[in-house]
Image 1 (spheres, helix red, strand yellow):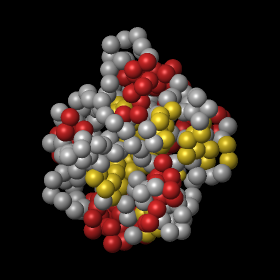
Image 2: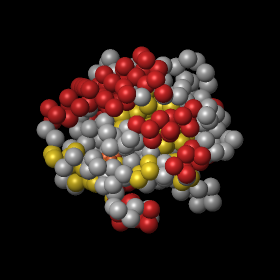
Image 3: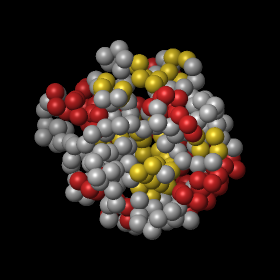
Length: 304
Ligand code: SF4
């Protein structure tokens, strides 16, 4: 497990979770994003695994599937409720991940109801294979479509179709399971708002820029604003990654609420039960005054 908030230094990693726990590793998707300043951003997890602090754990490179069953026990460890991103160094629902492994992970999450778990995938249709095994404490997430995927540049039409499919799949996941569903748009590299629309199923959204060490590559402010309009119109809580700070420092969105820095979470599961890790707070955002409070933060990254 990797703790995402360090009380001694105040440093925060992936700000929207307390920890990452990873029984799976590696990914074949090869995502890349073209930011408005012309920078091409790579998968952050891939960079960490091939050139960064995680390199020792990825002897075959990042484009390889790693299964670490000994990490399954870690998934449910600790009595204090946590927000845990399971699969931060992979896409655990990718077709290359054997179903038995996904089942083993989902069963482990089910056994630790006091924790809340985030997952993300770019292979949204795969989620429908697992709805009968999804535990209620799983927040089922999709990532917004990147600009490069599986070694090729996507057209805008392809990106829109992929996002439309992801929203339909999340709506179906929600219908079948009642679980919270969410989307990560980090980095936000194109205008998602028209596809998301007012009928979206999302219970939560994360928006971010691209990072390269301390340098950030900001999204088009109009794309941030358009997405916020849709999400605010549906009362959807939004969490900004810290690397989006320069956009808010340099751009006036024209309305007080639109200019508000957000680190908001859903407070309850869809059946009305409180989410202990959000209500009590346990690390990351809570240290700045409770989940849902507004507070700026430093940045690192995350995946998918
Ligand atoms: S961003 Fe996620 S889905 Fe894309 S290559 Fe990285 S781990 Fe895989």
